[in-house]
Image (tube, rainbow, N blue to C red; front, top):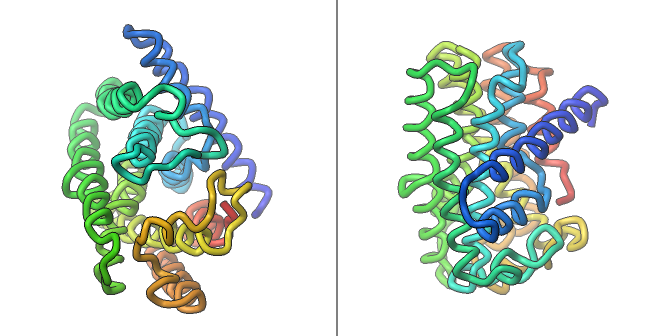
Length: 294
């Protein structure tokens, strides 16, 4: 990891980690609900989606703070999805990021409501974002609802659940993950492009990069679930096998999964080369995703 990228990563995460509690603490609602929301928001994490958005802004010489509200909204939606994924009716996990899952601390009902509150508050954040024109806000909210909803993450999560215990092809698994994981990651790139004022053609190319980043992230996650360090990941490894989920290593073998990771890394680099953005933080971020250990 380059010194420049490491400094960027630390600063982006610092901004997000500082802003998220402020956005929740100022809400007029029950203390227990805010406590549950903050518990999961402040549990840490890689903050990949906000960082991805801010890397696009950096590539266009825009300050990270221009996208802070949208980046924070992305992290709120990601956190809500984790709270709900961990519930007994879903993946039934006891640990997340090295600490008890939300429902283990606050109970299932409060955990569900905390997730609901994070989801709805995310749209309010974008609506009230500074430095963004009203017409761009409308496009950001419209794209966000698609990426996070039935056509994107939520639908992909159900498709993933329906595929448990069944034989699926690599193409089917790719389709599931493009929706479940990839859509929000691709949205982060598209949102950054919209905020930065990129052209329609540039935004299209960046979205291609974002789509490949989404697949890179999921393939790497599947690899880490087999050979990762449970302490570094923050939850037990092997949970995909226990839940009888289809994974890239399961379908292709570990060597095949790693070869697929390399293929999609090259595909992610192609749009950056066409846009003259190779050597930027966007390339550093792709390298970070494929080389991470958690």
